[in-house]
Amino acid sequence: MTQTERLSYLIKYLINEIDEPDSISIPVEDSAKKHLFRSLMNIRPPRTVSKEFLEVQNTYLQEECTRKGIVSLTDIPMIQNGIYLWQGDITRLYVDAIVNAANSAMLGCFVPCHGCIDNAIHSAAGVELRLECSHIMENQKTKEPIGKAKITKAYNLPCRYVLHTVGPIICGPVTKQDCDQLSNCYRSCLELAATYQLKSIAFCCISTGEFHFPNQKAAEIAIQTVQDYQKKKQDGLEVIFNVFKDNDYKIYKQLLG
Image (cartoon, rainbow, N blue to C red):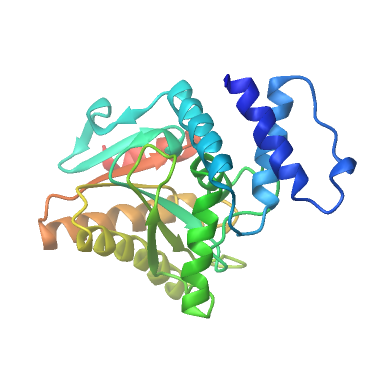
């Protein structure tokens, strides 16, 4: 199969799972097909899928990952001892673990092609990531608390694992509790990475997007928590602060410079 043929197969499979498959028309252009495929993945509930689908999906997503370009730790300059700063798509990073800013349901984003990092990570990993998260939440029998962390496989991402953490949602002035909870997100991920003997972890800007934590304060908390951890543990865990927006890059560059 070519990538175009794989994409068509995947779309048709996912459409056939829907109650009224005839209500969705398949576009002609590849860019529109990719948008539809991602949308169908995003709205799909966590359930099993055929072995053939997974084989086609995995080949398709891995080729798309290669096309985007994989970035390893050696491609990123160290900005402080054990700390790196990189601006770009976190789903391109070849590290031991990347951190996903999840919500309390921890099943990924169900909004088609939403711009959040939760959506991007699940879309690049494939449908099995939501299924694994669902198994975790079924066993837990309660929503994921703020400031904790869970680990899953990375599936079709170039990293080995995904660490999922739920940050605080800001609806007014930032409180000390908000700051402590955000710090706990970073600390929980670092401790979980150490438990699994991971050597590198890439953090996104937890809570600063849809959860509205002020970017400057969030960066200060992130850096301080990581630096405190590295001084205390000295376990060689290398940390990448991954930013996507220019404003966040400027903030981190200034604080780390």
